[in-house]
Amino acid sequence: MSSLDLYSASNNPTPEQLLDVCARFMPILNAVGKKTWVEVTDTAQRLAEQILGHYQTLGAVSKETRHLSKPGEKLPYQVLHVFLYACVDEHPAMGLIMEELEKLYADGTDPKAQIFMQGLWKGSLLNMATPPKLWAEDGTLKYSPSAYAQMHLSTLYRELTDRWREGVPGIQKVLDDYPLMNEASKKLIDAELCFMVYKWTQSEDHPLRILLADKVNVGFDGRARFENLIENLDFETVSEFEERFEFAFALLKGLPKYKVDWVLKAIDGCIAGSMNSGIDDVQLKLDCPEQCIPRLVKILEAASAYGYSPLPQIYREYSTPAEEFKDQEVLEDLISMGFTADPDDIDMAVAWREAAIIAADEKLILSLDLDEQDLAQLSIRKNGPGIRAALLKTTTGRDIVFGQDLGL
Image (cartoon, rainbow, N blue to C red):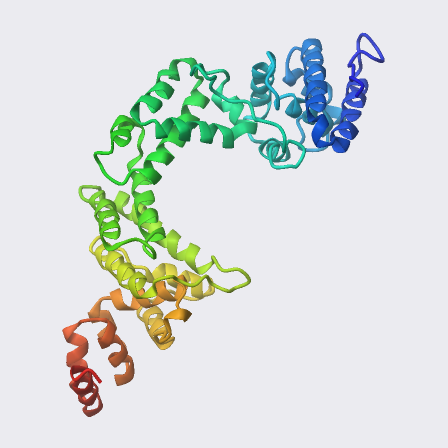
């Protein structure tokens, strides 16, 4: 494969000549087979180094080629691709190239370039390539994490995960590298480590939670606790569910009201996600609906002590924007849909709907104009003296209660 040369047409190439030589890289890129990807990256490396050697910075390249770029582009896409593929295989100038890309694109005003960078490793071209590592085998930090993450975020995450598995010593090594990082890199690593704390530690005394305590945001932590609780309730054992339940609600104690409200918005997010998670409007069924609904009820009843109600979010899922929210009307509509008799027909959306009914305040339920059959269905699922008393006021209701007492 022939090497491309920035100076093939002139010792002082024009922007048009720069674009022409980069454009000749694109057919090479598109025609490459698995055995020649190294040649492609070598070509990109040499050309990228020539361009930076001539212009000094990518900012200068952007300025010189502005009239050749499409609206919204900081670099013509042909030039950008040369620099992207110069960051696939390790070489001495790769750190500099990644940092130049970060300086140019960090403001996020060229979304197409962001897509190209983030999708670099998703195509078939690099199937046989091994992504460069952020840390060397001896633990030395080789690149700026924020610059590296533009194209290699999944690899960065895998490396951090490996350090996490080593426990406190592994993560301490990461923290020891903070003096070598710029602020963007520290912010990035903080975010990734906190995500791991939120997702992978389910106790206050977890050693890594303690180590990273100064980085943890109580609001995000709280939301993650509730998301973890709800996402896992369909298949966890009783003890696992109880541990997650206690862990989630323990955080609410002592928080100011506005933070509690913000944390409990996580439940709204889970409701919205569940009701929109189907494929072609077909919701995914639950493995254990008989345990899922009671667990949702327990969560909603506990959250109600902090002023939370699922009805507004469920209303948003079922209503049109012009409709006015009234909790009595929403609850009445939910009850009118009935309860699902066959467990095989219960998906997460149905589970939320039925759990919201069962967890609703009994006084609110009794304020509705419900017939005996609706009250009977509720009395089977909700152990409330008020509902039983309401049934006993009518002949039909008394017959229903008598039958239920006999197990009929």
